[in-house]
Length: 349
Image 1: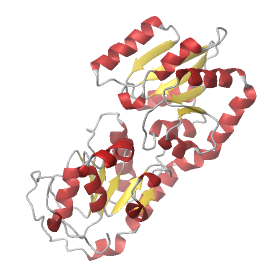
Image 2 (image 1 turned 90 degrees about the vertical axis):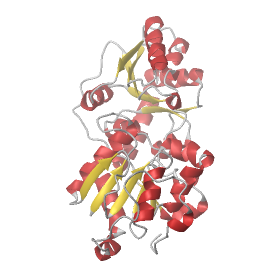
Image 3 (image 1 turned 180 degrees about the vertical axis):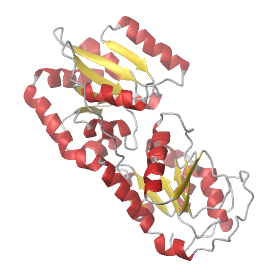
Image 4 (image 1 turned 90 degrees about the horizontal axis):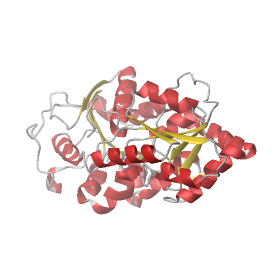
């Protein structure tokens, strides 16, 4: 199939959408498909559109559905889609309606959707490549925070927890992730200046970031909203136990009975969990065992097979398509308020 894969994150960035798009494009090409990754659909004919982000890719979704109403349109939902935009944005809700299939990145994501949209929803956990793990640091109990500095990530909650640790604690935090907001970068530098156990490394090449993560004793994800964080997949793939804010997206990744949750925004509770993981070997082994039990969900083979099975749902119809069919509208961006009468629903929707 000729597949247009649309992501609002520019190629070469290391933000979540761009990572997902690059990985999916690689898998799909390995399965024999021809894939072009685009910020916005360029109007060229394709057998299928895969779009990341219901609100930000809405224009591409509307235009492709108008041009090729019989062809499959897959919409992958991000954390901001599931936990904010589909409640506040008419464009995001319209994208859900138009899409042939929806993809969520963890098994609690489907429950966030309107009941009428769940039957066409598939769950695809994100995978992570593995790297050789360096030995853990011996002069400290290293805790990793891996994520770009964004308000949705509650990025400094782990830094704030440090002052609530017992005096004898050897915990130190290594924070990886770039800052698009200069104010958040200044805050990271301020935390580093006043808290000697906190170190901000900024944005790192992916493999180098993975090696830092793999040597860590723990990984903390403090986010306010997550669709299915790839950094959790990376921790699971490398056997690094996770301490996580108790939000739906993290529970969908780690399981309802996971022992490593703390209430969102509560740095004192986070500090208690960190101290317990450092000092209580039995608790630490429990976290590791629970993460090990979820490792199979984030295997490369599983994610690739999930994509193959998703596209196989459309194979009979794609073989019948008319390759000579031309787009009905020009490739320039159409008004996102295209009337519903201009978007005919195919029988497979």
